[in-house]
Length: 247
Image (tube, rainbow, N blue to C red; front, side, top):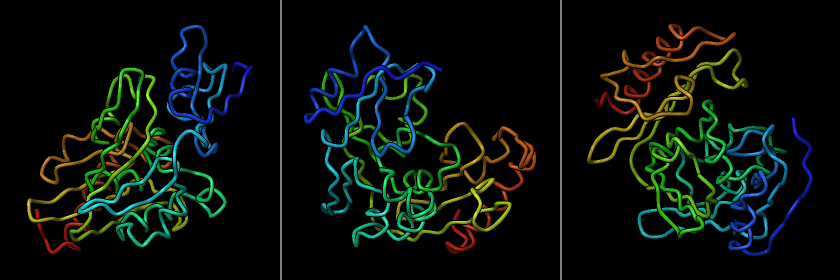
């Protein structure tokens, strides 16, 4: 583990990007500060805190809700514009103390394979706006999670989600309050059904209910890969049933 030698808290996004993309230092971004996101802690020598460089507003725009990336998870839970499924899953991300520090942008950047909120974002068609040294791009969160280079020197400035549709979720953990071993989230809209799963890959993933046999979950002390695949089947069936049997 390397020691952190410098802490930066720039007031502007351009300054934050310049600090992050220097060639002579290994620099990591922090948002809410509950984790060092998107970078192996052992490789970091400097920290760029983006709390002042990026906003925290939440706004309904037409058929989407737009969250500035520093929006705290508790604010996501409490905001009237947040879709009910996302409010429920954001509440499950951790206790109140963490929800008041953790951010929606940091949640996407961390790409925790067990994050139920990330699964909810996937079924709500989440798009991340990523600012980089060469400009700004809008990327589906589903693509960002699986990108080989991750954020690649960029900073998430916004996360937007679709609203509407019928939604449902199901989970299995060792206790009701525990992080789930596997969880499923679903959303049905006029053009089809979306299912997302946690605990079956290196990040939460969108899954085809008819192709769950293709999953190859990693195992751990809470359950083997075979057990996780069976949970994925069972929980997907429960979600589909809650959504009226759509497939």
